[in-house]
Image (cartoon, rainbow, N blue to C red; front, top):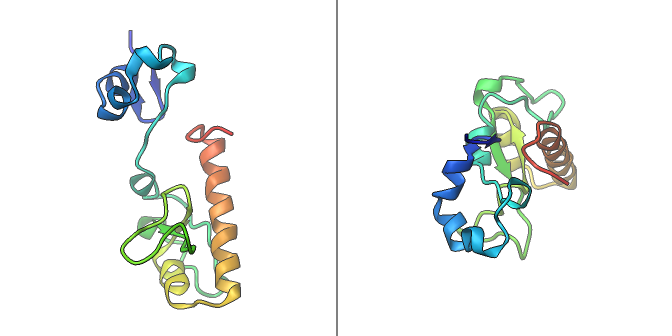
Length: 129
């Protein structure tokens, strides 16, 4: 029998390079409750609702939604993206707006979108508090 959590089955995890690198069953990863689940949050953003929701900018087109990484000194920089969990689902219009608008308002809207995105991932059982 194979247990499936999120997008990966128990066999997928057991055979993954990350699971092996973490020591597999030898380091306490012997039950599903102790497993580290990995998913591609960038791919998962596809077809999700825009969470940034810039008034008079958002096109609401879920087919254009991507993961918009939040830029933060010490976390990201030249050629280094922040981790995927530090991002918001954004439609193409909102993503372009936050990439070109560096005001405090844009930063706050991006952060609010990130909180909405994390909340949606928790409610969907993709992240656990």
